[in-house]
Amino acid sequence: MKDFNIAVIPGDGIGKEVVSEAVRVLETAAELHGGLTFHFTHYPWNCDYYLEHGVMMPEDGLDRLKTHDAIFLGAVGDPNKVPDHISLWGLLIHIRRSFEQVVNIRPAKHIKGVRSPLRDPKDFDFIVVRENSEGEYSESGGRIHQGGDQIAVQNAVFTKKGTRRAMDYAFMLAEKRRRHVTSATKSNGIVHSMPFWDEVFQETAQDYPHINTRKVHIDALAAFLVSQPEAFDVIVASNLFGDILTDIGAAIMGSIGIAPSANINLNGKYPSMFEPVHGSAPDIAGKGIANPIGQMWTAKMMLDHFGENELGDQLLSAMESVLESGIKTPDLGGKATTKEVTEAVISKLKNSF
Image (cartoon, rainbow, N blue to C red):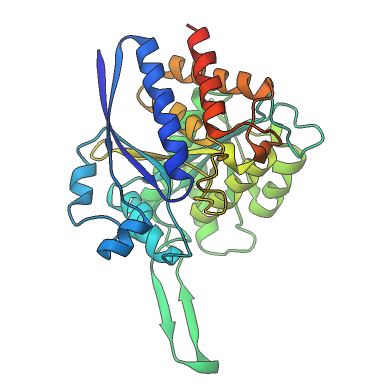
């Protein structure tokens, strides 16, 4: 029997709705599996918690979280209550940085039953490995002077260690897929960090001679993800470039509401964190129409992380089958509620055993 202790942070807005449904699906999957048990501990940390306590999480929050095997997060943010830079840096990014979740991975594939905006999606299936701890999102920089003389400096910090570990992860992932890694670069315009990125990529590739490689400038790569997404397998990118490419990936799938992600700790010292790409969507919160597929696909990624790949594949297959049958939330052109989609996925999952 495998036991996993999961920290659950529903967060804000629709996060509270989709997380509870995805937990139901995970509980069903564990029951059907027979040799798997999940123990869920819920933490009510969100913008309402901030308004009451002045912090997004308690002082011992990280100590509590690090005792778990993984963190299952819904969504963070409600700008009508708390500025985004406070909510994100006080919870989501605080966890990512403190728990050394140095790689972010986000898959994108043509999902059966979801209409892609592309005329001919050709069953694309790629995954973006995003460096998640430094790069363009480094905190180095500042402002000086006032008025018309004001200057803002934002430093992009790239270390060989941080760059190499993201690239190693991408190559090892490609070994399990179609053995091709594309590097997102811009060395023809960003004259220091991107030539450095290219050098580390070339060096890393030498350790994986059986993996095909390609480097593409970010502007062209963004266009290629729209015109020929089926050409890509694993893409490795810096923090900013990865962020942009994965939003394109979600868009060509047909809805950001179905896109998952994982923040991975590589050294085993801390838990990894799993979250959908979509935000808290306060405009539809409480209406019962939020799309739970992104959170469920995130659950599938967590199962894969635990080595339960077969069970994860069964869950994804159940989700695709439900969508293909026409049971969809309004964002996908359907009329089903959040709970109706969940019930359908659970039913399909049970039928797969």
